[in-house]
Image (cartoon, rainbow, N blue to C red; front, side):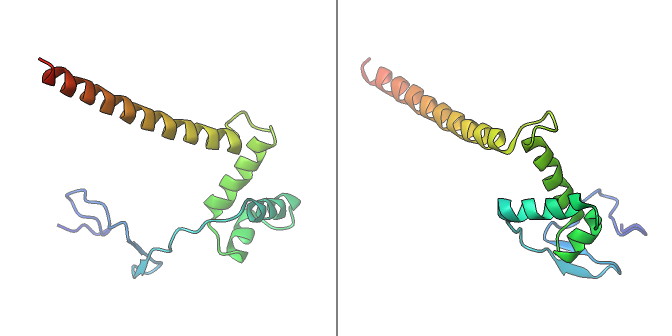
Length: 122
């Protein structure tokens, strides 16, 4: 059953590939875009100057306010103004996690090989 707000009683979430516009019409999702660190720094600089709001900057460059706020927050972290992981620390952590996952897979393969050859020698 569909409720007045458009959600079903089953609790099913709306489809991920479609979102609703202002008047309920369905619009395809915009593909994920990537931006250079220089572009992000320029956007953060525009916001910090104070002559335009985050919303205005986001609208002028067709960005989401959330993305612009996240970039500004990360710039503060990278500058040492916030006590969180810097961009380079985040990259290093991600690389270490990938390496850890790969090494665990290697160990698992070696354990299986050891068990296989142990059975053969009996």
